[in-house]
Image 1 (spheres, rainbow, N blue to C red):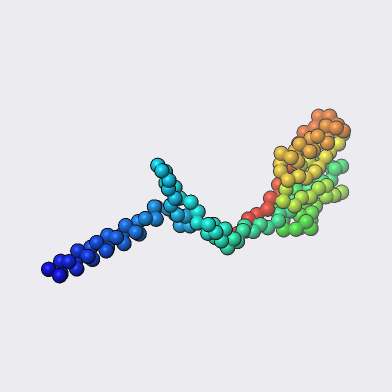
Image 2: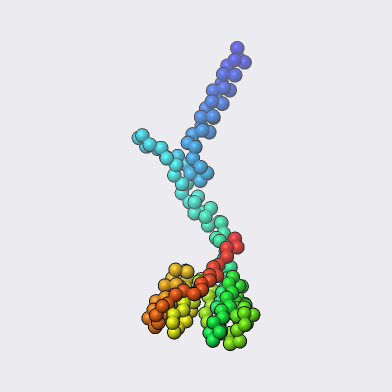
Length: 165
């Protein structure tokens, strides 16, 4: 008889602990159940979200540089993008301009983590840089239209930062 009483007590104790374990309400880690009349939800454990977010390192980025170099007399353009420094970007654009037959190549614009555009009108050529492609197109077209007619975007290029972590 004592065996049966012991078995019954063990079963009831097991059931009690099982119901306590499932009382977490199916909430994800870092949250606990909260309920009221007719509703139940999971809410963050105070302080838990800040601690985990602060312990994670943020993303790391590496700069990217680009440049335009042009021989305006011959209408030759050298372009470089995604270079590691301003010096590398300008140098590569100059080499590309010369390789295409340019003899009076000059850097017309350069950019770090952004976009460049060259807009050409009947009389003038405008180059500039900005954070986005749409922004630089608008800038060069606006400048060109203020000084010239028949303006059109001739060339664009972007050198955007690269995420490394």
